Each structure stands twice: as C-alpha cells, then as structure tokens.
Length: 141
Image 1 (cartoon, rainbow, N blue to C red):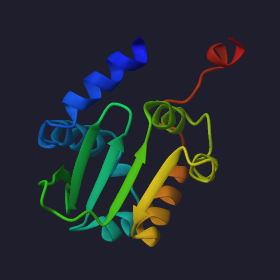
Image 2 (image 1 turned 90 degrees about the vertical axis):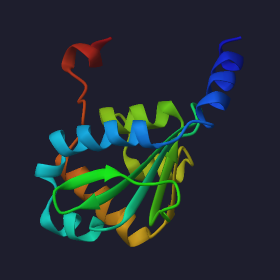
Image 3 (image 1 turned 180 degrees about the vertical axis):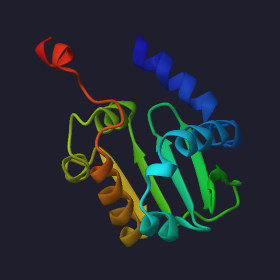
Image 4 (image 1 turned 135 degrees about the vertical axis):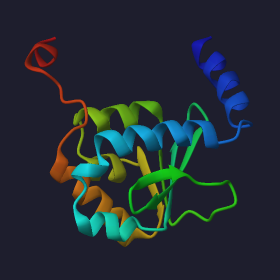
C-alpha cells in the first residue's frame, strides 16, 4: 500500500517543473558546500549543468555552476552529468553509510555523461566527508 502511494506521488511530481526544487538545492549547496569545494572542482563545474534525480520520488534537480555557486538550470539545458538513485541510496551516500563506488557498482547509484566530471565531483565530495555523519549513539542502535 505504501509503495503504491509513493508511486502515485512520484507520478505527480515528475509532471512538475524542476526549477523550484533546483533553486532550493542550489541555495543549500551554496551555503553549506560551495565554499568548501576545491578550486579544481569549481573550475570543472563552471558553466556546466548537473542533473540529480531521486528516482523513486520522481524528483529532478538541475543545477548550473557559476563563479559564485549553483543556480537552477532550465529544462532545456543539456546536462553534462546525471546522477540518479532511489531515496535510500541518496540517504546512505549523504550519511556516509556506503562508499559511492560501492553504490555505483551495486547499481544503486547511476551516473551518466561526463565521467571525468563525475569522478572529480566524487573525489572532491569524498575529501569533504559525509554530509550528515552517523554519531556513535546512532551506530549503537
């Protein structure tokens, strides 16, 4: 029953434009991560569109990098890199519960497009560490 409700919700979400969630994600990344990105990552992302998708919810985020961070990219802009996963994969990645390489090889996380840019992004994010690390109390549960 829950799976059917999620599928119905996802069907509706895929019909919505990506600009509103893209603007929110861009603001979050710009505030929390952009200042920590190494110069080579900023240079590699400059003027390029990165598409992120939460496949089971139908959420699409399209970001274009500029000199001061990300902004929402239009639907017509061609993505240089597309990264997609189910909600659980994104959660595990953000928490540092699984290595991105493992998620990729287990086909939980999918990447299409400019693989050099994808590896640069992956390696840079690996160097930053998990976005929401698991605490000791959470590990013991």
